[in-house]
Length: 169
Image (cartoon, rainbow, N blue to C red; front, side, top):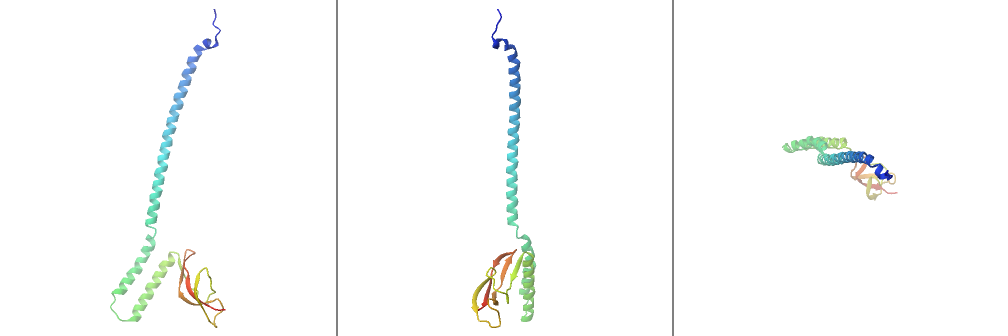
């Protein structure tokens, strides 16, 4: 009698198919393991890069003022030299202070700081703070007639407004 059962007739072919499927499963498991390893290495690399960037950012913060402070050292040296002079000559002391102030303002300007000295200019509430209004017949209305304290702008941003007196209408 002949066996007409399709499963039985394909049984000899089933073994090679199972072996092929087993090989494919092993191959895919190997690839999956490789991908997991790659993923873990990439994650570790990203974490290391994040830590490096954090460390670099912290260093940048700590030493951000290095150039400015290095530029200020000659100004400090000038002040110290001026304090060691034992003379009563007010003119010489004033000249030394003037030179030191110029050096300080030059360092500040080189680092983005600009003075606001609005004497004779129209009042600008964005840059000036009016302390009082005064009668000033020789000046136009709303014009700065006196500067009590100069203002400063750092890289186009107001650091401190100028304190001014403004001519009345």
